[in-house]
Figure 1 (tube, rainbow, N blue to C red):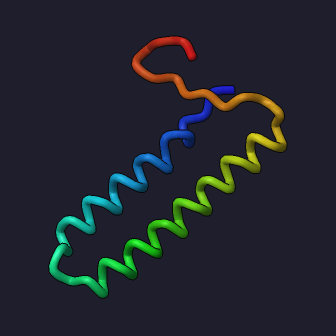
Figure 2: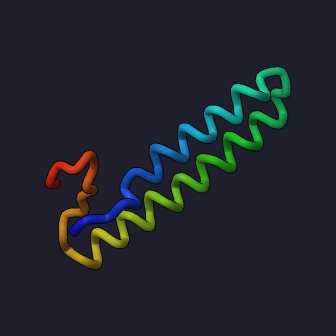
Length: 68
């Protein structure tokens, strides 16, 4: 089964890291964004796990024209 949502946790971590870099002097805001980002990533990961559990198939992603 090909699913492009597999890469979403990695992209979410990257986006949260970029936002945190721009707010490097504001510690309180960094904490809030970091916790919120990790909760979002947890939700994404749990949804991918549920999708895997219910379908019973291995989730793959087609990348660069190579067959997964």
